[in-house]
Image (cartoon, rainbow over all chains, first blue to last red; front, side, top):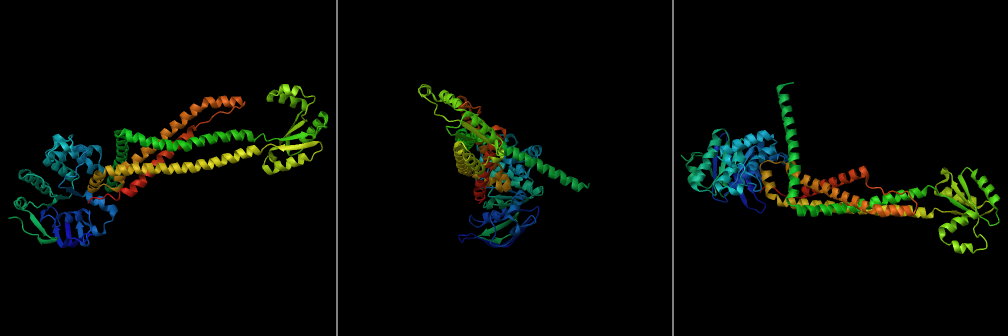
Length: 223
Length: 319
């Protein structure tokens, strides 16, 4: 599903964010990406989303060779990937329903199909009753769940999350991780960047560890 | 038809429907956003409306002036002032002879008596004229050239040929002021065109700037839309519709301004035309002109928005 081959990323100001990173994530796998802040987790996710392009090396995602992907094809790639952000990236001038419906509107689903899928996604994250609410009226955990509903509403084959539990207390964090595991169980490949080692080491999935832009460990479940 | 082809056709149909749905959604959404900030929207619409109304109004005025000058143009005449010693009988036989010429359509004799009474009636100098011992006016022949002789050079030739006739004191071609008016109208036309182009550029800039601000205000939304796979066309669409509405709305205001101004001028102008015994009727924009104005406004809006979107949207990328 994801393959990095000797990928390096140097930002224009000369900072080396990633150096010679190689790894694979197979379909249906759930993998954590960890490391201190500044270790290169966000850069790695941005390379998968084509928010950045690598300086050297090759990235393959869901059969797309990203190095040769034309800018006009980037929207198509992003529609195949669901993304959850630490700061939710919700639109505060529209309802929960409209926020979750956005990817479906972009992909051009019919009105009826959008309604069906949005309610299914909201039901999945336990927010079906709040579809008409504005995001400001929701708690942090609820906002994050709206972000997750938006990420999965398009039934992507790959789900990325950047510090999805960053602002949440341990109990809520565990709940959110459980949600990701449920999606993984129905066949979605999941890659989660998180520095919450105590939490992710309990969950028995493969952990990729970055330190100063280099991949220092990529095997081993927490067990 | 194979199942695959039928399926891909259904998919194409579905995409077409959703494409149309997003157009409808963008059009409605951008319109309701304009209504959401009525004060600034109305200000912008007024600026666009006034900028469009100026050249359009001047153009209507010019069209009317031209229709007047066309009415004056056709009866171009050459006045032949005959020598004082030429009698009325001689004048009428000269008139008959001249009217047989190929380049003359018609000759009308105005006798000294007719001329005097006409002058007395129109000039208001009746009392003064009554005191004159003797009629100072000569007999006059009004020569209407044949249509083939109507252009400037041939009229000149005809005039000098007529002046060479025995008994003719002077031949006056009274067209110069018509030519001057035509030259003035042509010059004004150029000025209106230049002004129109300048103001159209102004409208483009106003709309471009308005769209730039709208893009800036919705920066976060654009980032999110691009992150979840929105294409450039998808992001662009609502802004293009905003420009379209501004252009169309401004054109409607311009139409109202021009129409109301014409209505306001109609009364005094009719009175003036009546004084000149003219059947002049003030003509407005008409259906074609109105349609052209609305289309031009909408097009200017679209182009202005397109320029702004092309310049500013690509700069907003998720980071």
